[in-house]
Length: 409
Image 1 (cartoon, one colour):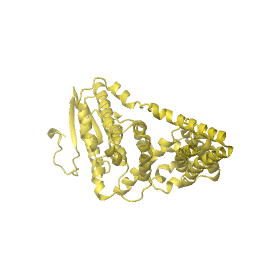
Image 2: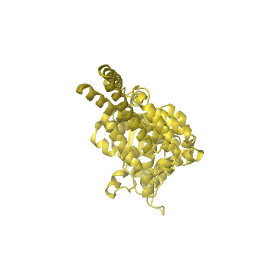
Image 3: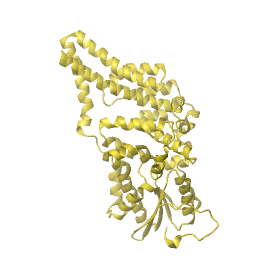
Image 4: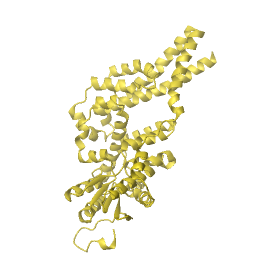
């Protein structure tokens, strides 16, 4: 903060001074307050700055969904699980819970409420009746843009890293603590991957800096003259530089950054090509020798159905759900628009109906790896993901086997 705003020497507790940067945009002063996401001192510094600063707007590095999760933690208890599965959002919910589990681990280790510094900004804005604005891009869009940009072979690597971060039991290593303090939850989780691939770094960090800059410029255009933006310290430089660059149309920039890049033509065609190859290969096998054809069919059923059922078994699925996986996967894998995960998850949800208690305890129980199998909602999401993963592996192995038999025949 500027020298003119330094508090007088009093008996107030001395707070650690967080990174601070003030940028002028026309008649508006945008004050960027960098926070450490696992620091109690940052929480106190945010509360102190909001309470004493001369601001007419408070902005936070949250999207509306993440802000709602902070202010209404019981919202997840009102989730319609069947609708989530039917709309194809089960993977996104599972990933969000995995991120929350990682955040809860950090909170437990450092003895601070998850998102405490953002909650301090929200509570402070309410106490002073100041407008509160969320400026970050929706977490779902960010994750989808990451998913669309990474090659297909790296997606399993990403998912396994995310799942490992959720299910790990050890504390964060001491040498990593300082590195985590200036990152937000997404960056901390994907840090290793982001350092290795620009297709991850872009949507995760650079694009969000540009998105938040555009949102802040919109607030300036709306007439706010002194804005406090509470952000992770890791965004301070990038966001500051983005604000310093001319941006003719902030809304156009936001619309562009919220668009999902279409999958490549090759990626769209690959599942159909594979399905045609498999059906055609089995047909050729029957034409050559019915025995070869039936061998291909049996191997296809065992590989796709068996591995899908193994994935469901690993998730702790009900025996009838295992049957659904085994019977359904050989057919759904031949249609790129249908996934076995939808059928296995719906089966699990109907057979073992989640209770109100399962929904209310969801966030708490998924913070521990055992809770993913104990909680019926989380287990259903695991069934969706792992049965689908098993079927996908079976599809490629089965396709390889059919190709080998055709070439060998």
